[in-house]
Length: 276
Image (cartoon, rainbow, N blue to C red; front, side):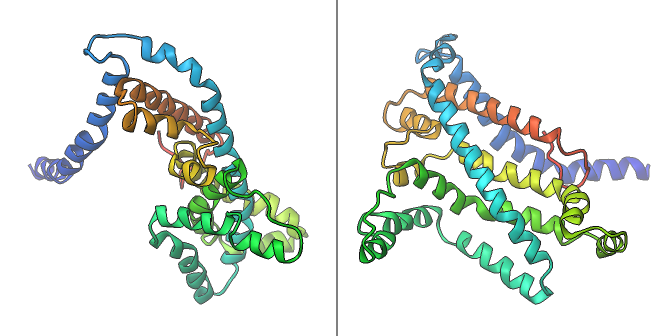
């Protein structure tokens, strides 16, 4: 009897979360699927899916830029997380706060501020002009778009890796030193394998928003770099072609799920893994 009451209580407690997931996750996904496979009259059609071939280059460019931003973020974040994990507790808290501090600011403002920095009359070109190098075309370039992605999403790479690193048992590192491991060997054989869950989580948290972003490419790319997020935004906001926009969103979601599934195969740990 007590077991039945406990099961009923657990179901009652979890009910709001189930309803929330159904309303804000499942229902929107069903709506996207419905619009993707129908025309403006509501009739079933595959024209929206078959018409996506003309956006193949845009899909590829979005995946490429997202991959570049993810790799650069990982290269920057891993040593930073390593040095943070070896600091004193007070310094670790300070560094964590400094990393999260830009995230307290609005995303649009953070991105827009780079226009002032990268513009021809911006801070960087002003300094370059004074030493006779500039001005250099920095804004409205693919590099500026990747830079915006790295800047905005770098904390999502640093924090998961740091969280895993700080939990590594120091006795394991001492044992590696006692066995004659060099710092590089210790990093390669002990630290890196134990931080794979954090790396996978960081890659996911940077790659997914990067591949679907549109505001960064619009402001820092100047409209010259059209990513798949821009195409989706254009279909919904300008062309009012919800069916094609939903089809592109559906295919993008499938590509992201495939990427997550591939990355998930590299993580055989139960802690910090990705669940699909």
